[in-house]
Length: 415
Image (cartoon, rainbow, N blue to C red):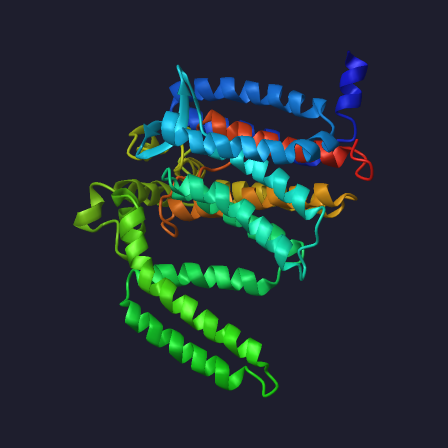
């Protein structure tokens, strides 16, 4: 049995595993400081995560490649089923509840989408292949749209991380810039008249036309630029309508607060309360922090969601600027190592899956840090290995160790 286990865990990258264990341990310490009761439950989920690691290593990488389409379809059924059989928690119908156990299918969708994207892209090169690119975008839109309708806009945003994977595999940077510009237009259109936005777009278009378009520009290129201008204009007109129609009031408030102030009387005692005390906790930690379990904001339970979305403010208060920077450095080392391992994969499937894993972690960390500091709206993005919850912990663990299993195997044969 010992010999079997040695073979099972042969050639794994201990660097990323050690960082994972450190993160789990440090995350548990901070959660215990916030809520010992919830930390007890989290400990059980941590122990179960090691069981999942063992199960993940029982399968060969080729098995994950073969089951990817079926696994993806299964998660789509779960995402659809949650509208009929799910339970509404905190304004979102995103959970299946079985007695004391709750399960969020959007977490499973991150794993299945990573696998199916790797499966499809390992068979078709997306560079200058518009048909393959269209298929991949459909794959990405389906789970993201279903999750958005729950409504859980935070989890749906995570699927934008796959655009970074597509970029690594040959997607033009123009697509990323268009995507970012659409987000920028959406935000701007909520605060300015759509006609002012269109006027600004027109000025940008004229400037681009005069200074960037060459004399030998084809008629097709010219029509493409005109199409972009029209699509940007239409998007800016309909953005406020979309925002009012499809966003819940608490989502609207969380976005609006970014352009106003959490100290505003309108937000201070409700939607801005978390952000106000999150910033207070982080700032009060100063350079060296107040010390473990000595945070006054944490002990006073002033931040209602401190055990989940706002767990980082505990780090800021009790461990200070130094502790926060060290944590961020560990995350950067962790993600960098995943990218490094991805780049050395001999098999395309393993490389693409690895980049998807690294990018999911990257988006989660960037948005969560932005949330607690008021740079992003509060949209329910957890901090990997720190935030309370079994579904997220298990999904992050399974994602990571499927890739570690791929890396430890012979990538030429996927065995």
